[in-house]
Amino acid sequence: MKYPTVFGPLVAGIFVVTAVACTPSPEGGTANDSTASPPTTSVVSSGVITGFGSVKMNGVEYATQNTSFNLNGQAGFQKDLKLGMVVTAYGSQSSNGATSAATIIQEDVVDGAVQSIPATNDRIIVLGQTVLIDEHTLFDTSISPSDIGGLAVGQQVAVNGFVKEKGVTIATLIEKKSPSTTCQLKGIVENHNSISQTFVLGGVTVNYHGADFRDMPKTAGTTWDLTLVKVNGTPCDQITTTINATNVQPERITLTNGDEITLQGAITLFHSPTSFSVNGVPVVINSFTREFENGGMSDLALGVLVWVEGVVSNGGLTLKEVSFRDHVEIEGDVTALAPLTIAGLSPITLTSNTQTSYPNGSVAVNDHIRVRGRQTGTNTILAATVEKLPSDTRVVLQGVIQTLNTPNVMVLGYSIDTTPIVNTNFIDLTGPAIGRAAFFSTVTKGWSVKAIGILNMTSGSVVWSEMATTGEGDADDGGGW
Image (cartoon, rainbow, N blue to C red; front, side):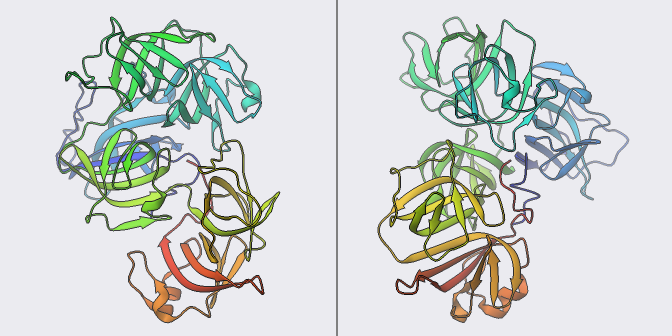
């Protein structure tokens, strides 16, 4: 599966296709174009704006000649939209592939005062929510300098982005805004108490007594814990620890059986590797799931950033394909910590930051580890997770092909010599062997591949035993939204 700049800067989205001729807008409008030929499909696409002219996201350009715009519940215009904003477009696609939007809706993920700016310099705290900032976060022109240095405690900001886990949001755009008496935040519910009518979102308590919560679960004994919600309320200042909600509603996408959906975001609820939610949408992996890209079922976990594609059935999404945002994987023995290096994989180095997670503790020299992350240079990786594994001589290298010179494949500045790999151990996307000749005639620069081998403890080199394609990767070697 080839995603259009799937993991390049500021790309995210949901893509819904249904076999009807017009799409009702959540605001009550309907796509009308009486002069045009009836469209073959209706579409709903939600993601980060990556370009204008019309409106571009998910590698698709949406014509906006007859589009109505709604920003945070207020009527607006296309000129109000900005790069990095998360929007949802309701429209149609003609049989020749031309796509137009009838309605485009934008919503902030958190809107309030900056409460603190930790010394890590990669996050801010807004209304008790940790807002993560990385190299792909955009800063509006209202912020000078256009980075975290242009922010100050007490400033009112609007954040576009995605809820990643409890109390944590990934920012795609940060803007200054005028002080407001009302605020908005999205998050995953903790500690719901239906008697006191309170729950927790990150570092704030939400009091919903007197609020409109008619769309929330009402069955006796039902808890809201782990539900992804949107809250409007007051106050919004830098000392807020309790928000008095005026409205509480589940953050969700309206699904219709038979819809085809492509969804990018974080796993916001995790039951098992076969049952979880992405951006609040329940998904299921079963025999219908035919493809994993840049990872496998063992890599699925709470907060992991993924693309999923499937079909709606019984209100949930049955997956056909799964792809991971953090598309680099390395497994092997640690030889040094500063920087982190792996035996047999020189010149590759791994870096970390305060957003890197260590699910089973810090690592030491000689530990056998698995790292997932994204490429930040020719031979450097920024680690998203670093996990200790049982001792093993197994070595894994997964990433995007930089150059191809049979029998060698260059990944992350490391030349994989495929000479020792037997013909039956060249594998394609879906698993069956394709052989050496077919492999080298299929893959090109920009494809993602996964090599598995064994470390020769005497020589310190790797003898490679298997090579598999894991997808038509992004040739820009980018990481991030």
